[in-house]
Image (cartoon, rainbow, N blue to C red):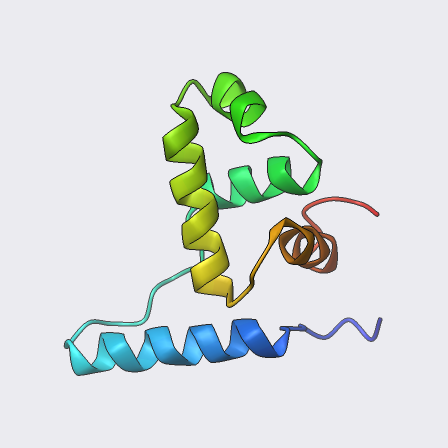
Length: 96
């Protein structure tokens, strides 16, 4: 509401863990927390599309969609579609 960035506590923990793992392994800081494809799938999940619908829209397998969704949950420190949807609304990927 104040125009400042917001991250839920689960996402903060996941980002910090990821950053520390990268430093230990000698890697740099990633440019983005999630990939463009993950962002696309996040938007579609938040809009209520099923894995099968998303797979059809993006011309990938259902397993690929499920893997991207699992990666999103892990990276953002979330546990289900509802949290992903709330996150997508907060970051402006979809409108409430």
